[in-house]
Image (cartoon, rainbow, N blue to C red):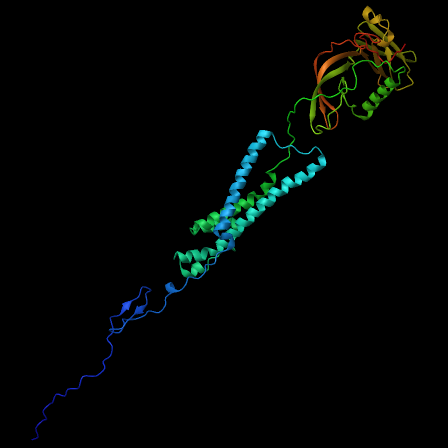
Length: 415
């Protein structure tokens, strides 16, 4: 029977080159796997992003610090300037304008368009800054690692309407974009109000008193030998009553003011108060105490009386309307009956045969002279008001001497 072979131990020679020993597997600070270096050797890592030279950061020009600081300083200076101008304007009661009214049209356009243009530039700058800020919101979110990358990159506020955008931004807790949107809405809404920053108002202020020359003295002009001037005045009064021509300068209601020169070279837009003299004329017209209008024969008879002065007139029945004026006579009052005919009271009578109606009006004109303070419109020369200060104390040929001796012509009877 054959015998099994005896096992033998075979030894191999030690290899001349062994593989390098690796250090244990490690994790880098970037989260990627990194294996150790061969024993006895140094490992040079690949260049990382931190070792690269930093790239230039893109930033819109409107969002650069010096632009934003300039914009804020400009608004601050404008706000301070407006407050200072408002204080000085109230203290000076406004700023004077040229007296020529044609210049005010140009000033009106200037004070309307210049503030609007200035505010338009500021609003444009803020809206541009807001636009670029909305563009940078996704990058701001990525930088702070908030939200999913897909939602952040797709975030776009530039296409949403402004009046709803601030609600979305507050809901997303984007506070800075929300504040920017609200500021833009306020600026756009308040921009039209810039046209009312400067206004032109009629402001009253008092200048120092000045002297003005007068054209004459109060009294009757004895150089007129005829009644042409009187007739012309009566004709103007009739035309004024019919066609409303308006009173001549220096005549206001029952007052005729001593005319003086208006200082239009000094100021042309405003009113002037001056102390002068004026004549007040009062017609003192009253209705009759008694009136009777009845048929008498083929016509009508109008009778009446006032203060002891009777009236007895015959009216023709062939006419529809008759009227006239006569001087009263046969008065029982001695003070009235003794007056000359040119200064006696007069009676105006009106009669209508169609309606069998009539009326009597008695007038006793009165004329007085006063020291007055008048208010004159410098632009038109018209009297605005007459305020009596007292009776005129100087002697005149109207109230204290011939030819009137304090009496008033009635304008109906002349000697």
